[in-house]
Length: 303
Image 1 (cartoon, rainbow, N blue to C red):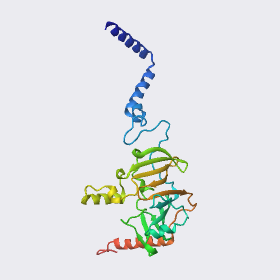
Image 2 (cartoon, rainbow, N blue to C red):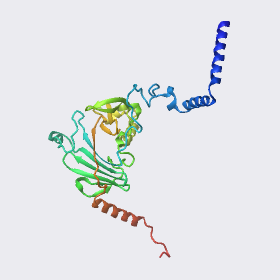
Image 3 (cartoon, one colour):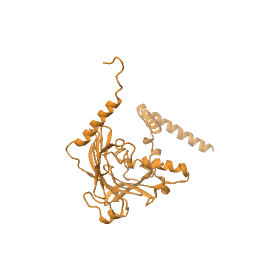
Image 4 (cartoon, one colour):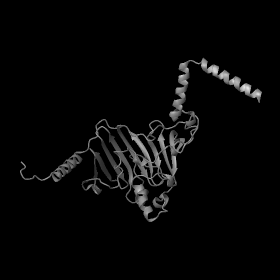
């Protein structure tokens, strides 16, 4: 015991001498670094997501690409993209400009084949053009905060309120259908048609519901507390999957278990996104009618 105690004392004196030999500035830097690592988890090796996985950050293999935040990027300030839609998850989505197979049209009710998006963040304008499986098209516009859509069979225009619409949440997010994605769903890099992508997946019943699905689920649970998303929405597959481009982090392919979405981004037009005259006139007439209706009547003595 005496021998061990003497050895420990000798080592302690040696360490003290070495510490005193270090310049004061170096000691301060060491203390600062220690404090930074304690206060900032990003600088603490013990908090490295690759070594200390959490529910928000699953294990990351050494050298593996990791997506930046936000995980799903916004479309550029001026952008155009098309989402091809397919309810048959085993059938590749129809490419832009390609006719829908007659067999699908004959076997389905009226459904949307694709939605073309145009965005101009400078003028805060969006245009959506929905193409239906019967060959018809319908346009929607978001202009100066107003959401205008065409009635069925092009019978006039109307202001969209609480109706179901792909454009309703666009002012908040270019891809509201992907609001559920977080790092707990990241599964690593995966090839899609020979291209590296960031791959995300989650079981249908574990996916966070948003928008109308969340509202419908809450309504269903009032009558059936044991209701599950699978029971209510009846997905065709249980695994929800998403592929993001590793460079732009824009979506490429999204399968929500019921609809397969393929995203195609194209070069936007050089011209500013401007609504057609009929939209401008409709909004002008509506705003004028609102102004007249909301103007209080003149009281006694008013000029």
